[in-house]
Image 1 (cartoon, rainbow over the protein chains, first blue to last red):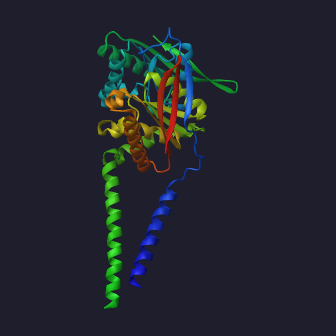
Image 2: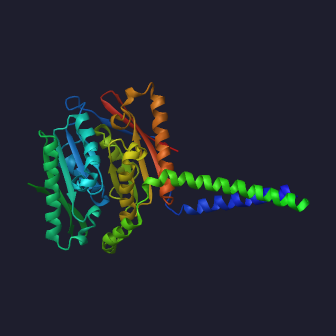
Image 3: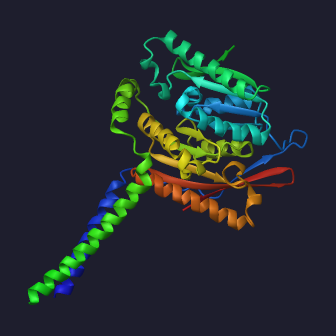
Length: 188
Length: 197
């Protein structure tokens, strides 16, 4: 009798734990059932590279991710020729002294491994890492702060790796009728 | 006498259960000890971002975590944008060594902070982690392994470990793992993305 009660108690507690665990999974999105996807790209032997020479640094933001990819592949014509590092706030963590060493060590691993001689850095307005546009107060203040950070990052990169060529861009969302376009501005 | 035996048996069961609960709780705490932000930092952050939330009406669906390797960038972009159908709807986090950074205790804090930014500011609901073959920065390349199967097993084990860690930290997220391979044949690069269950 006592043994039965023990087993019942144990089963009850186990069920409770399992149900509680299942209840924690609140996401109601459908599952992604995509497996064994093959992507085939034709290679032109004349342009085939065994190495890349560009490091491309952007923010992770979803509003700009697709535009960044088009910009680097089509506009800058660097397809298959760049290492893409994408971290929140782009160079925000590089300028911040607390995380500077760690971010630099990650950049260094790419620069040393792939003989990088050009860096393209893209920052954007209304960046979550800075707290969004609202945290600056005015548009001019936001523009100045991000440009200053970009230039600071360029100085830091050139100081560490003198032969690097660093190109800076600032992107922003522009409303054009119903569509939203991404505008890229080159920072001198 | 009979009652006492019963009580002792029930107590035994309760003690064993409590032991298991304590051990598992301690294990979770130990593995996440270094990742918990202090309360002060949390409140300041909420203040900093409170106005940021008011302005936004649309969020994104997923956070993609991948390696920065140039051989896989185009294929990964196509896989995420076209095959998974997440174009313009996912945060794209690309760091050297992909998930290796999460398992390394030196970089774990900053990586989890990065994930946290995506969770809090963009409300993502899915995580897609892509590891790949011949990862030089994370694993020292394919040459570091005796055979491809060995490499596959190691990277899959790491991906699964990362999934366990992330599930503990963000239990509401769905985590999907993929392993990318590439081979060269007849002037073509053939990429394959396999889902790890």
